[in-house]
Image (cartoon, rainbow, N blue to C red; front, side, top):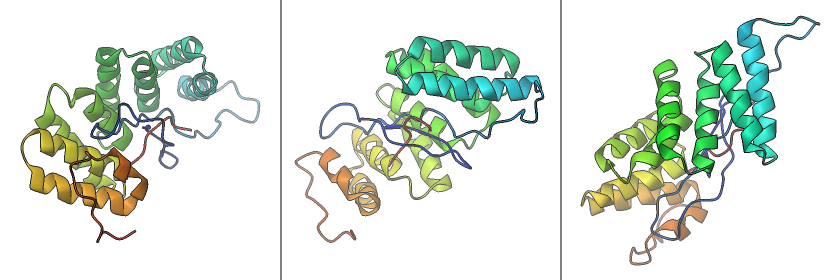
Length: 207
């Protein structure tokens, strides 16, 4: 997300994209900024304890300790199976380990709980675009319908369309991506003319 993700706060900060020019922008969000619950000395409910574990797991993940992060996220899910952020962040750990099948399962679980979780939609599209471009197109389209300024989603939507032979619409969507984030121009295939007339995408770990 260079992923992908906390808004309200769930928004994301980019992580390095996979591949070179002409490859989809892989942004994986890591985890949302969470308000620390259970203040005032209370031990907190299972939901609050799960949120604390997600925060703890995020710190471990950002420090490079994927094993601890994975354990924390799994414990959070045991305490609160409906914690969409815990499922999402566990998915990002699996993505870091190149365990895409497990990551896809966690993103799907997050979306069952929160269908409009844009970072989960984005990461699921990134992980499934190679095997199911039409589905990835639908996922990216949903992302930009919810979050029109998600530049990386416009970029990857273009790749999904191009893979299905829709070059004209792909170029339109790439132009939108570059208008939002000119740095994404380096991700386009070299054979694609640079949209010079265009006015001068994201998660992700979440943090």
